[in-house]
Structures are given as structure tokens and as C-alpha cells.
Amino acid sequence: MSAKPAQKMDPARRRFLQDAARGTAGCAVAGMGLMWMVQDARALPDRAIRPPGALPENDFLASCIRCGLCVRDCPYDTLVLAELGVDGAATGTPFFTARDIPCEMCDDIPCVAACPTGALDKGLTDIDDARMGLAVLIDQETCLNALGLRCDVCYRVCPLIDEAITLERRHNERSGHHAIFMPTVHSDKCTGCGKCEKSCVLPDEAAIKVLPIRVARAPSAEHYKLGWEENNPLVDEIIDLPDRLPGSGTDNLAAPGGFEAEGAFQPTFKLPTAEGAGQ
Amino acid sequence: MSVKTHLPVGHEAIRDKGLIRAHKYLILRRLSQTFFLSLFLLGPWFGIWWVKGNLSGSLTFEVLPLTDPFILLQGMVAGHWPEMTALIGALIVAAVYALIGGRMYCSWVCPINAVTDTAAWAHRRLDLPKGWQPKKNTRYFVMAMVLVVSALSGAVAWELVNPISMLHRGLIFGVGFAWTFVVAVFLFDLFVARRGWCSHICPVGAFYGLLGNRSLLRVSAEKRAACDDCMDCFAVCPEIHVITPALRGKDEDTPLILSPDCTNCGRCIDVCSVDVFHFTNRFDDTPAPGRVRARPKQTRKIGEAA
Ligand code: SF4
Ligand code: SF4
Ligand code: SF4
Ligand code: SF4
Ligand code: SF4
Image 1 (spheres, rainbow over the protein chains, first blue to last red):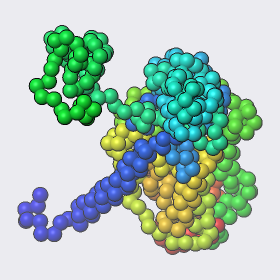
Image 2: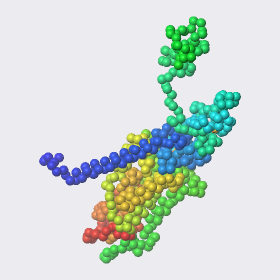
Image 3: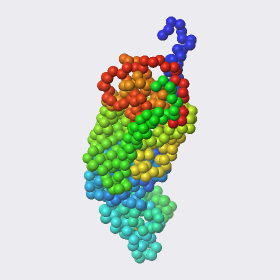
Image 4: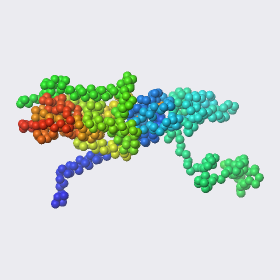
């Protein structure tokens, strides 16, 4: 500090401060641009499915160094590295498009073994535990099985046939005396390998598609208590849900327990018509 | 040697040492860059999988893992602790460059180097003005910025724009629009800022520079007394400022180029017709007398055509 109050700043010091301010400002601007790009890269397109064992997208972007070793060790050329401007996934990161080449669910999971960083989690040792995505019968208007024909291709190619995908029989309302075998995916078993999507016989797009879990599933409504699930008391060990009375009409809100049963609940006032009850 | 020659950059060296010796390290460097690239291309092109992956991470002969330490560092500040394989790979790479000079990566391995060298060469041929010159420390600012953005965003940030990995990955795995980034670097160096990318901006170069701060392998201006001020070394060196302290030093100053910015490219060795420079180690203390004659201030423009 000089004795005189510094009217004129030492030129060297001023230059230093100016440079520092300029450098910091420049980097802040560039940094914000980069930040924006990072956020942009997070918008993984729904058709880009990550390899088995991939960490959740946010962690994946922190851990994948884009070396492509997973791509190289995939024996079926399933995986590709995203190219800038061509594929929507963050540039250089691995993904696959189920409709092109699905994952064959190798027993030894070579892609996971190859990953040097753990972006593909080494904790995944049984490929059946993979959750790359979830198959969804997305077009129930064109799926041949849904139309009442027998196609079944997606069901037959599924490596976890009758577990991940089942054919649920229901009445064919159109013909009146046939069955519809509805392909039905079970999220607790489906690995998202995409073999069903790949083999769907429809031209171009498939009626069944593998979607990222975040798109395919709605978060469960935790605050709803499903009375038919056992051991699900409102407050553990203390408050239990009231059990429904047996008998017909038990789900009739106007008359819980039903009207017919002897001594059953009778509403204090009746709605005008029986048909209108409960509407 | 009293008559000052005014030949274009490098011509004296070619005249005195022959074409090959005057480009020895340039040729070796291009060979080395081609070699490292071909190692990665052997697999995809010829099915010989000695090396898998790319410069960001690779596996050689199924045993030797190598990882780019700067990319791994970004992932780590972004909050991911990598598997042992990647850590070991990064340590090996870091150790090698700490020994031989971090920016050896820049001049002997990095594929962008050929692009920016070409831009610099064209810049000299076209005798363009040096243009905007970012401040000396810009690359460290950029490096810090990259780490901060990685930490804040939780993603490996620089890989979204890094022209090095885009070019390298593009060549090995297929190019999308990655070439636009490479062209951008070329145009930037040619028209906006001479030697702008590698010598001022690139955070990867900055990181490797820091890594090789204490490196063993160094260029020395041991025969600086013989310097005839032709300025050719300044014309070809991508990091001009590193030469002055060594070349223009007094008897008691070290002739070693100790700045971590020096890329150990050896172009100064090539281009010097009187063999002032050579490679040595940082502990080499051979006496190196400074120049005795006082010379008039050099006026020739270093940008004159080569
Ligand atoms: S499990 Fe097999 S087929 Fe599927 S992505 Fe990995 S290596 Fe490829
Ligand atoms: S092996 Fe791992 S780090 Fe390399 S590209 Fe694949 S997921 Fe990313
Ligand atoms: S393969 Fe396609 S059309 Fe056939 S049942 Fe499956 S979803 Fe329907
Ligand atoms: S400064 Fe950057 S782009 Fe230039 S050679 Fe070095 S690493 Fe490559
Ligand atoms: S001093 Fe010599 S070796 Fe170092 S960067 Fe310059 S030309 Fe290359």
C-alpha cells in the first residue's frame, strides 16, 4: 500500500486485474456454453438403449470415457458409439437400437467385462438381471395378436419366454367366439434386450418397442395402499386397512357389503333409481 | 558466418544438413503419429486386434490398459470413482508422460497436431498476420473451467467438444459431424489466431504440460554460442516463448528448455543449421557458454515464407 491514496493504480497491477477479470469472464461464458451442452447431452433419445449394466444416465455421463471397448467386445455388433450430429446420444457414448440389432444377452456379458471404468456396472453378473429398458406393446391397434390373429413372434423370440413376456388370453369381442392372445410384458423379468422389437413382423416400426425404463414406467403411487397385497398395513404393525366384507356387491360404493345379505348395511337414503346407484 | 543470410525458414538447414536431416524429427513425429493411429486401425481395418479402443481408453494385447488421465480426472470430479482397470491405465500413461515430457503427447501422439501444424505451415506460407493472441495462461483457465463444469454438471464435460477424441474416435469408429470440429480448429489456427489452439486453448495440452513439468527428457540449447540469429527456430516452434531463456541465456543460465510448454517436438533441432539444439536430460549440466558477440537487434519478420 502506498502512502498516498491510490488515485492511479499501478499499471502492472491494473493490467493484471483486467486480464484476470477478462479471463474469468471469458471462461465463465465458455463454461456456461459447455454446461448447456452437458444438459443437452442428457436428453438421451428414447430409441437409444444403453448396454447392459449401464449406470443411470447421469452417472453414466460421469463415468463413460467413450473408449468403445464395450463396442469392440460385443460379439454381435449390437453396440455402437454415438456419432456427433448423427445419433442423439451424447457423442462417443455406447448405445444400441433394438430394431436394428438387439442385445443377444450373452451369458458372460463381455461388454460389461470390457468396460474399464465401471460405467457398465461390474455388479451385473447374471444377464437376466439386466434392465436395459422395458418392452412395451405400444401399438395395440396393429399388433397382429391384438387383432386376434396368431403371430406370437415377439413372444417366441424372447429369451425369457413365458417369464418376461406371456400371452394373456382374452375374449375376442369382434368375432365373438375366438380368443385374443395378448403379448404381455412383465417388468420384473424383461431385460430390455429388444429381441421382440427386432423380430416384430410389422414393416418399419414394431408394435412392441423397448423403451428406457424412465419412459416405459410410471412411478408407483407409494401413498396408495393396495389392500389385496398382504402385509401392507397403513402404519407398520399398528393400523391395518379395513377388510372388505365378503359377498356380492362388495365393491358397490353405494352399499358396501351388498344389499341382499341379511342384516347388511342399509343406506340411510336411497338414490332415485337402482340403475343410477353409484354413478 | 558473418554474412547474414535471408533464406526462407529452414532453407539454411536444408542447405547445410540435407533435406532428411533438416526434417529428421518432423519425419519421426509424423511416423510416430501414424504409428499410434495405425495401431488402433489395425483392428477395425485388418482384424488384427493388438490394440482395442481409442486414445481415451484402450487395451493392448488384452492385458495393458491405458486411459487418458485428463478424461478420467473429469469423471472423478464429476463424482464417479472408476474401476481399478481405468485407474491403473491412467497411472501408466501419467507416469510415462511425467518422464518424457507431458507435451510429448501433443507433438508425437495427438492427431490434432498434424492439423494445427498444417495450419501453422499454411499461415507462414500465406504470410498472414498472427491475429488474436489469447493470454499466455488461457489454456489453464480453460482447463480449470472444464474441471469446474465437470464437477457442477456431474458429467465428463470436455468430451462433448474435444476435437482430439472426436477426430481419433471418428477415424476408428466412424465419423459423423466430428470433422466440423477439426475443420474449426484448422480455420481458427489459420485465420483467427496463429498457433491458437494448441498453444493457447487446448486444456488437454495444458494438463499434459503440467504432468510433464519435471520431466526427464529435455531439449537443450547447449551450443547456443554458435547461434547466428537466423530466427528459424522461433519461426517453427509452436511455443516460441520457451526458447528465449535457454538460447539467449548468459553463461551461468541453463541451456535447458525447462518450460513445460515445450512439446519436445524437436523442430528447433531440425531447423537449426548450426546444430544449437539437441535432446538431453534435465540433469545434463554440460557447460554451455552464452553468445559473446553483441548483435544488432533482429528485424527480419519471422513470418516470411518457408
Ligand atoms: S450382452 Fe452381449 S450382445 Fe448384449 S450388448 Fe453385451 S456383448 Fe452385446
Ligand atoms: S467400455 Fe465403458 S467407458 Fe468404454 S465406451 Fe463402453 S461404457 Fe464407456
Ligand atoms: S411380433 Fe409384433 S405383431 Fe407379432 S405379436 Fe409381437 S408385437 Fe404383435
Ligand atoms: S495442444 Fe491439444 S490439440 Fe494440440 S497437440 Fe496438444 S493435446 Fe493435441
Ligand atoms: S523448443 Fe524446440 S522442441 Fe520445444 S516446442 Fe519449440 S521447437 Fe519443439
